[in-house]
Image 1 (cartoon, rainbow, N blue to C red):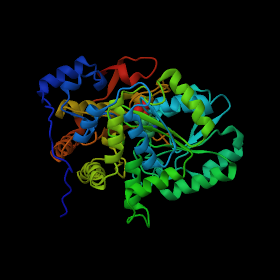
Image 2: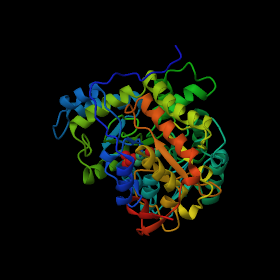
Image 3: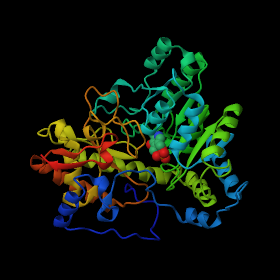
Image 4: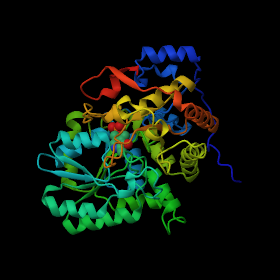
Length: 465
Ligand SMILES: *Cc1c(COP(=O)(O)O)cnc(C)c1O
């Protein structure tokens, strides 16, 4: 059989409500043409982010009832710890409330003024936590990542030669660690190969540096390795996951992605003394080491989520549904960042509406058109988010565009929540984007009526130019 189906049936449904075109016109104007200011109930298909928006399984909900809410030493913690040790091989496992809490603890311990932290591409909260510590965050993507049409199979790879040059230039003593983000979220959800991880590890070993993973989408990355890396197609995903983590000295993880939960995070460490110091910081601001700012039931849901996410029929469906969206848009002539990523498809808004200059926010125009036309919520990742006065140096739920792009990319991200939408929802999105693309000449740019000084995409208001 060639048809790839959703590998689940639906036990609980959450109604979504279609609005009329005149209603959406009014709601969009009331929201100042900023979809962050819409109420979620007025959105039909919400592709704002894949973070914490997934559906839990019946076993995860059963875990919610089993949750042991003891302050210290809860059964749920040990179940969680066992699962993570088995999955990653890491001895030291700290739960946190989400990824950025792990980052804050890590960089408070290893960051600081004068330090330099390289990454294939920092996610924005990671960059913000590195910079908050006083250190400098440096992105080292491969050159292929700068070209939206380049279909490199591992476009998320780190530029190993540039890493070596950076170490020569600043000196290894200024680097507390090297970080690799899998998949490379800021670079379009693109995977990193095992070969690249091994090459980065070799550089780290030569200079005595620890390697850390930002492993939010480790399972999607492992599945891409299985599909694309020579000699890996016969390996179970669980083995590839182990191979990736075996190369690392530590990892920060947001469980809101491949943990298949709505809240949660992890900090994984090998070094005993770093683990002791991280535990103290965790207790200071998050909670005791056996709950880390979460409820016992959250730990149960995570333990189960980290089991389900490496099931290969799940990953086949997951990666295929994003790829299906991307490939169908391409064949309808819609320009996207290629190849489609693991968790999202990025529309190339500059190519989509070349008649709108960057100063009038082509990405925002496409976002507004998708909501107007079909009730779909996407997110602009372009000049609104990263324009002149948007010093995007504090946490927000989306992400930076490929940093080293020759000119800033004007992107619109369609992020797919996990196990939430069916193929007919995806077909609806394809039809909507295609129709908006056919009428792209009618799209109008926008200008600010209210421009906040920082993180302006959240609360900005616009009018049509
Ligand atoms: C989401 C994300 C984070 C931060 O995690 P939160 O749970 O949102 O705090 C860090 N790195 C990457 C690559 C992410 O996608």
